[in-house]
Length: 140
Image (cartoon, rainbow, N blue to C red; front, side, top):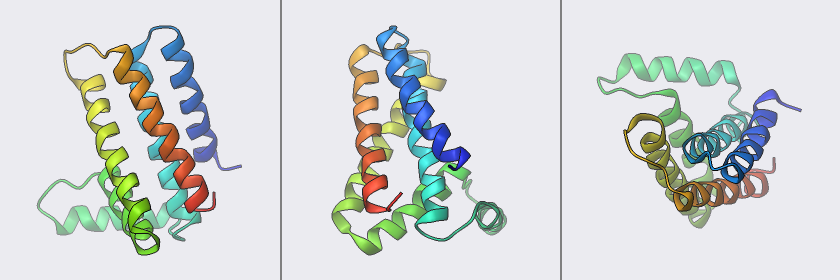
């Protein structure tokens, strides 16, 4: 099994355990990274873009564009395009869930604000839905 796929599974499980123990901010972090790691894996398995090629393409984009284009934006954008070619509805769910998860993760990791039980549970729900979507639609 791929290390990234396994890390994704571990992060999803960790999010559940953290929520059960009232550790909401780190649970959001784990929910988000579960999806991000599985998305990198999906780029390799579904789109045929191996990890070295992903890094090379990202570095090329960083050199060409004046705006900051990080690894997260690259993976979400690139995989989103591949998914969109197959299914507009799947793409809509993928992009919506990732956008919400990313906003929760930014709040959780960077802002001086509390993460509520509801927000952590919503992050887990969104990430679980996204993981299942990637597994079924990208044949992981």
